[in-house]
Image (cartoon, rainbow, N blue to C red; front, side):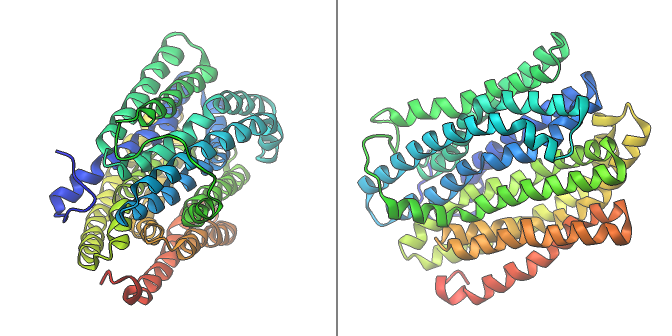
Length: 443
């Protein structure tokens, strides 16, 4: 049976509702992980480094989808909570069409900019050639990837999280199977991995258009709309934290790569890429939970149901605490097997990756609270506080740490940076939550 936004949520019901979003985010993150796994083992570490060097840029230019998805779904869910279904559908349609148009423009411009960007990131020779090849092929499906990220949030707001899960699982499995076929069997190299990702992203972006376009499909439907500049502005404000998260993460990850190129060359970039794959999957649990629970928070905020808002907040904090400890322990256990899986063919690279990951994983004790805190304020339609948390977490504190700590601790300072940044952000997140408790009544 479908779970409605207006219901009271027990732990069981809450987990059932958010699980599809968590799995959706995990499968989304698996795109680059699978590419990296096959490329590293069947093509080589130079091509593997190219993926890791370009991925921050590719994720950064796709940030429009995350911003409109999270910011727009919060506004649409709040509008549904106010009983304005027709307006909610018009807002939803407008935001999807804007993503489609904006995505096409960004994809075309990015394809032309790929080579100079790769040069700025430090690529030369064969590494530069691989970066441009991989990046330009992925621009083919960039618009669909943005749409997929938008629809991930709106499937939840439409009370259809399980359907969204099926779409992303099919897209992810397609990517994995084609990676095996194109890279391991047909030996198409780096291009084969990129084409496999394109095929998966096309499925994830195109199918939801047909689904929401059907007039009897769901609570939300694509149809005629008008241009609502205030709604677009509010969406961008609400989703500015997610935009900031993606843009800042892209910038900071590029800075990590530049520092690692300085201290360890291509091996440093390859090691960081392996660590980031696990970080993507672990963080996807928190991002997925935030996406899945955000429409619930927005709906009950719009309906002024303070008791349920308290219930959702308290349960969320307890769940995140449990996951934080579990993921940290798991990360320590898998450090050696993970390094062996991706770079076991190179003993020096294996040791660098294993050591770096054991230090880096302390951040898993903290980052879930910051990710949820930012998303929680987005769901409450307070985009300013949400954006400030994300801005400090993903840009200011990390940039300061990555520039200062390596001067003191050498390459280990690079691995320490993320934990220091998350700890500083946690202080800010807790301060905002305590100060705003009487405004939103979630205590």
